[in-house]
Image (tube, rainbow, N blue to C red; front, side):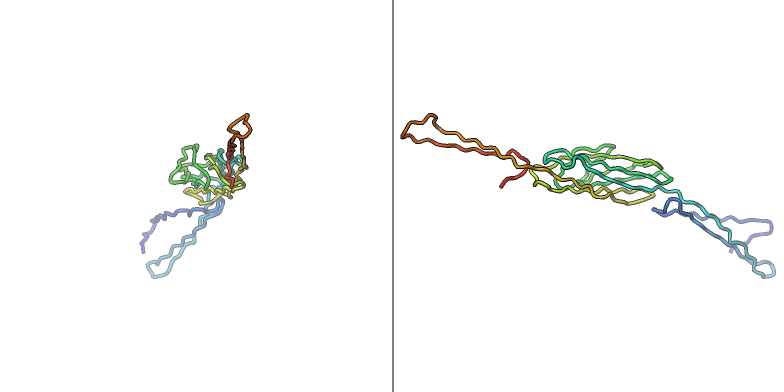
Length: 212
């Protein structure tokens, strides 16, 4: 209990934090009451006093595409990650992570992205309210790879105020076509009657697909 002398006041301060992922535009309502006793022992009350505040927060969405599609075995695949903030506040401390999928070797990333142990990541980014952020990274498709192999990849986004959230899978199909070459030669030309000669046949697979 805190005594309050006549014609005096007391102030109490309560520090609170808005939870992560609080919806943009939602309201926070808080009420306080006070009670005490006068000199005659009577209970005196006041309140509740109520305050209402609107929450301002980012609202993030993320999408991801890979091009070209289909992509040739041995070719370059470029991913585009798009982050949009339709909320009323900037998203801060934005982190994007994107595992390098099977059959892909990392090549490069823009905007300071780095590949660490097979995960492409960006840190310390910001997406302003009503704005967007686009990131790219590219890699090389392995070769040989069976025709119609699917390369599936998902990007994840997190921030101080909202997240984590994931993109829909980006699915790219690998195009591989068998390509055989053959040639044949004779050891003698012309060849005399009664002579023995040899045929040599050479063949090669110059494609991006195994031939069995």
